[in-house]
Length: 305
Image (cartoon, rainbow, N blue to C red; front, top):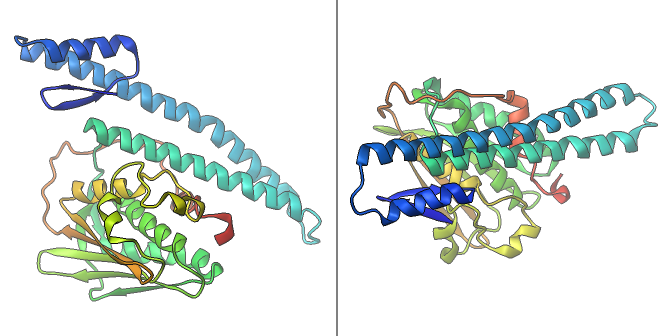
């Protein structure tokens, strides 16, 4: 349950903090400065506890994954005698990636809910980023009998971006397109230069989304159709993070879809969005580029892989 003081939503985890927050809602005359300081201390403690818990979960995962990698190396042979064991090791690795994705998404969502998520801004080429993600995705997409195409009307466009989070946005949208497309389908990704913004589009010709469900797409933990959970696995936070990350860049997300015809997600990211100099976040345990792709695609159903 959430507790509200002066329009601030505060998630708490234990009874002591709950009682403090409840008292805040009952006070008519309070010291704004002292209450704000105490509230910030509580939020900071809550945030640290959540982040520490996520790292504690990641530590055994890293051990399991490293052991699986070592086993894979030692068991690899040309005669194929260890095929079944290697397949099981692959399952271990994929599910490690999937748990890492869940943890990462929960941490990001928690930070967003507290207003503490910061961007790591640098000067990046949005065309190169998008082209790289398409290329990194193409091998898996080809294996699934799908095709992915990339189009741009510019060779290069330097912008102030958080590269890792923009990559996650693109991977999430491409992952969704994969999940809801049948073999033989096409996925089209484009970067188009506009007057004062870049338009990035991810379009598929998959199963599409009913109009009544479009408004719920970007709500955390929501799935537009519960029956789709058997087709496309996941926690339901991916599109919430997509929208949050894009809006933190001063941009917007729009979706167009027709049932049975396909879906298109359109991102508008402005060129000259102004960031505060302090608006940066230290990245801990950042995954490599290849790992990032593996993690974001880890919940694509087995029937697709």
